Image 1 (cartoon, rainbow, N blue to C red):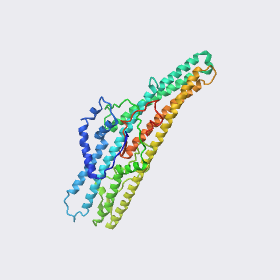
Image 2: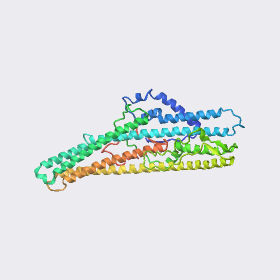
Image 3: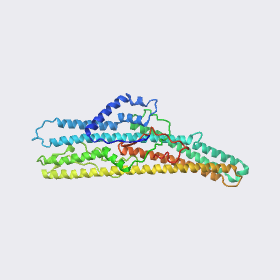
Length: 446
C-alpha cells in the first residue's frame, strides 16, 4: 500500500468555507471534552496529536477569529444602506471585503499546515532521541554492550603477560574515553527527547504540565515513490495559503484604482484603513527548519492616498503593480522552497542508503578482525589497535546512518507542509527499521 497521497485543490471560497465550518463541527464530535483527557494514560500517534492540535492550537484559533472578523466586516458592508451618490466606492469596497474573506480563509489554511508540520517534526524528533538512547543502551546489541566487551578484552590482554607487548594500559583509558563520550551522547539524547516533547505539547496547544505519551518505537521507514518535482510545485502553488493571499491582495490592490477614481477629493482612504495588511509577510519566512531563508516582499498600501483624483489613481496603479510583483515573488519563492526540500530529501535519503550499506560492511569487517585477533599468537596482525579502530568505525557509521535517516524523514515531512498537505506520508502506518537486518534502501525514505 502506498503511503503517500495527492489531494486535488479546491479553489472556490464558498465550498472552502463550508468545509472549514463542517470540519470544526466534526472535530467537536470526535475529540474529548478536554485535551488533557485525550493525552492521559494513552500512547498518541501523529494523527491523534494532529487532531488535538487542530482543536486547541491558539495560532489556529487566532486565524479563525480573524476569519470571523472578515466575514463580519463583509456582512457590515453588504447590509450598509447608503445612496450611491454618497458612497460611490461602496460597491468596490464590498468586492474588496469579499476577497478579504478569501485571504483570511487562506491564513487559516496556512496556520493549520504549519501546525501540522510542527506536530510531525517534533514527534519525529522525540522518536529519534529515544531511539538514540536505546541504540546506546540495548543490553544485547547496544553500543555500550560492544564497548563493555571491548573493555573486557583489553583488560584481559593487559593482565596476560604473554601478550602484554601488544596491549598497553593506555588502551584501557582509550576505551574508557569512548564510554565517557557515549554517556555524554546519551545525556544529550535524553535532553533532546524532553525538548522535543515540550515542542510537541506546544504544537498541540497544551500546557507545560499536560502529559504526552508516544509509542516506544524506532523511527519509521516509509516506502515512498519519488514524486515528480513539477507535480509537487503545482500542488504547492495551488494549495498554499501564502499564494492565495498574494493573489487576493493583488486583486484588492488593483480594485483600489477604480475606488480612487470614483471620487474627487484631495485625500481619500484606501482599503488598508479597514484592515491590517502588515500582520504577516507573504510568503512566510519559515522554510520548514532548513537553513536557506531568501528575502521576502511584504504587502504595502498606505491608509490614505493624497492629491488630485488623477494623482491618487496613478498612486493606486503603482501599488497595484507592486502587488502583482509580490504575487510573482511569492510564486517563485514557493517553487524554490519545494525544490530545495525535494532535493534535500533525495540527498539525505540517498546518503542514508549508502551509510546503511557501509555500516553493515563495517560490522562484518569488525567481527572478522575480532575473530582473527582471538586466534592469533602474540605479535601478529591484527593487533588490538585494529580491533578497536574497526569497532569504532562501525559505531560511527551506525550513528551517521541513523542521523541521515532522521534528516531524510524531516525533509519528507517538510514537503508535506510545503505543498499544504497535497503530498503526505503516513508515518504512523510505516514500519520501523529493523536494526541490523535491513537491506540497502529499505530505510532511505523512498
